[in-house]
Length: 320
Image (cartoon, rainbow, N blue to C red; front, side, top):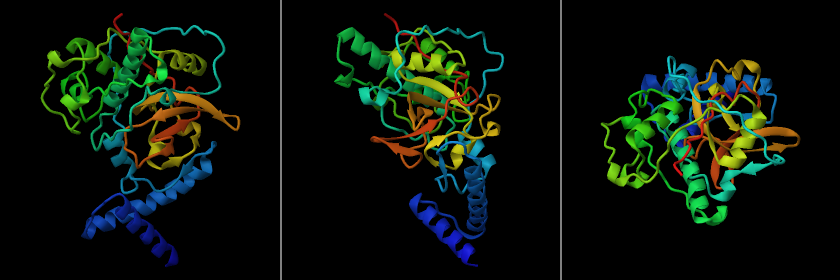
């Protein structure tokens, strides 16, 4: 009984913190799911090989199937035309730590809501980083000058017909959509609403352009080298355990780091090591109540090996 009361108290605190409102049978159903997720979080904690902590998150009232349907909606581009792949030449000594947030190349964490638009967030935030780099090169500014454009992503959700709006998509398709449209507008002119609308792109207001994209090899050193030289990268990974993740360096068992189970697109903004454990710094799109608070934003760190990270990283190549 004491354990039940403790679980119920946790559940009530969860609903208050995340503003969840359930009544009657639905409340009972969600409480049962919440208790099941507590047990799963304990199991994943025992299996964890890094420093990650698992526990109550904003997704604890969802079954794994519901979480996958609402948030893990990345779709592999079956039948897609061949994608340009590159080999990254190593230039100088790779730093042991690098973080694009410290240079102003990363905007605030956003919330995609219950819209499976992670692919659009990942791609557009990559383009934001590339334009940050381009502006500084053109104006010969210090990287610390802080000239990050806040580019819209609703345009991509609405106008990319190769993907599925809030039902999932692929960053490469988003890059191709931006090329086809001719550019992107500022976010204030075409704000994100969390659902698909009709395409309202207006070329008169385009302020950011790309002319291509590439895929990096599945090699951690090459990805880190590319990231440090050219800016934040759009990446995809197996995110099933993020339903339970609170903080720390995530290094799950191979079962939950499956290169055949890529289901979520994010932005890699840096890398480093902590007590000898290497990690990637990842920007997600689930709002500021989720993940580990680092500096002024919320990020999550992943242990870098091929199954969880280096499968599809993209860099738009800008017009000179």
